[in-house]
Length: 316
Image (spheres, one colour):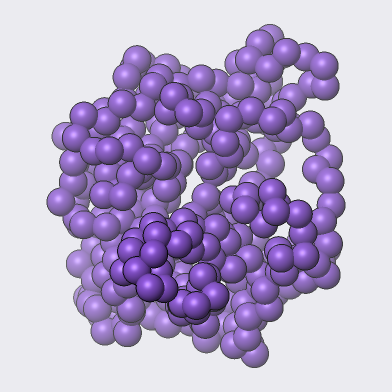
């Protein structure tokens, strides 16, 4: 991103379905029939028919929510790597404009369970310390109770932090195991038909006396965060050549809105974001990646990040 360079992937990725995210080293795809599939890119063998190896390709049951018009998957999270924990992992998704939740244990269940929660708009989902945790638009963290299939408040948080209710929020686990909240401040450029990143805030969850609170971080030091609708992760920047420390890499740049009130002259104009780039915590500046110079298919393709997982498995 820093040098505006595109590099080929070191492994073959078939052109199947739509890639909507990644988790635990697996890519997540969904097709037009709302069938979700998990794909392990490092286990793919050139020339081998896709779907033949359970270590590389897993098809999940059809998503068919009973109470919401399904339009897209916002987030997909796996509790564990299906290769190393084939009998124990769970998949949870946030989907639809109403931000409903569904989950499934693929080794034990044949259909999804749908959670009609009352926590409003959920911005992000993460598997943290053996729990599925979500964050709402206010910065409230809730966790999933597997026993009764409901969401409850994870911690009582003192909201002294100046969070913006309507800005996008992401949860990320830091390399040291802290829970971080990343808030992307965006501004619309109405006549140009896109929005841009104005700033980024980072908070970590700290215990102050007997109260938990989001405490703003002025620096993330040698850490680099990668955040986006499809996936979020953190790394120690010095462990990766070319990775910039104290920076946040934004990897979501395409959100479509068809709200008439947002479009010039009331038209149903397509709105898209221009938010692929790097935010430097020290200089408080954002350097965008210029997708306009690339082919249309690249500019209009959702971006995602993935950390490959290396596990020993027996080939099928």
